[in-house]
Image (cartoon, rainbow, N blue to C red):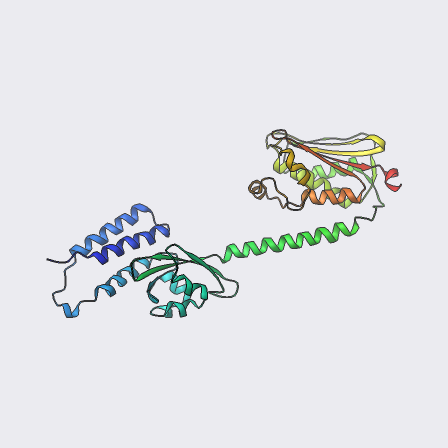
Length: 342
């Protein structure tokens, strides 16, 4: 009576695991495994033992065939020798790796260490396929001799992280040297605040039709200021209110005279607001009360930090008030034109 093909059955199960890891649908994996195991019983057994392929080699061949269509690079290692590599692995590391000692093929101390680690352990290797590349290698135990190594390319994620780090560093530098260098230089131009606010609001009207309301005095309201920076201040406040406010509620903007001949700009949204504990930190660079929401809205985390520096240069005052469910109100008080000179 023919022996049950246990090595083939075991490899069928292992191949199914590899296909599931690669995202092959469960129903398709099940169909392939059933057909594979069935074929092991139906296949005629060779009569001449002298010409049969050894069971270990036959099992490795079957495993290699099962791994071939998987999109993730996969290596089958017999103790330390690579006995199978699917198409994705050969494209990544080269076809010459077949039959090689894995410690030579992978050329990294951590990769060598992975061969002796526990099932499911991973290592991250830089420079495996070229300068700047980053790969995560994970070990999967097959049997007492064989190990499956998965190679996941993390280069793109690492590049994004580096780009973000560079952006933060550059943005911080720019914020310091464009704004902070001028912090002690009082602006000398006279700016009509109502007219400037009207122009900036007009820029946003096509982006949020029907949402923005503007209240401003009929008479001129002049401040001593840098028109470019004050326009940036208004853009940052209005942009934040549109992004984080309720899309079905208005963004209310007002320009009015205040006490002691000051000019007062107020921007209010009707969004979810923030908890009071966040208020002292909102003008910190890159501070986010809800990082996921800020990323989805496209915020950089610099808007209010820039507003704070502009207000300080103009010898003004910035106040932010909010509560959960009540939106955010930002008020900027600037000295009038005469007071700014004193």
